[in-house]
Length: 113
Image (cartoon, rainbow, N blue to C red; front, top):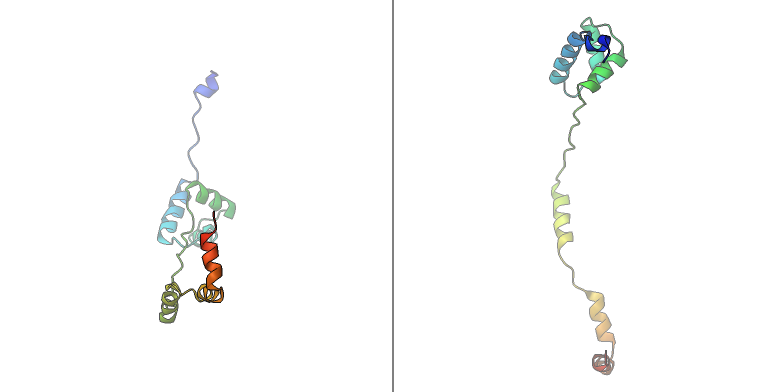
């Protein structure tokens, strides 16, 4: 192993303060995306590029919390669902059997399988 690799000391994170501020703002405003957070940070005196904010945003595994859609339950809609759920009588089937002569049905029932 090379001596330069062995004695390597990583440089301190120059975005630590910015990262902390970004995380704090994102926790306060969970519905804000990285662009809106960039606008807030620039108003607070952090003049950095949007791409840097995006990179830090992704590194911290943050994302915009999406609101779940509310389900509207209307009285008429609930009633119509209940009426659709009931089984309906088989009208067509009964008409078929009444139209077929009795002798034919007896023959069909006695036919070998």
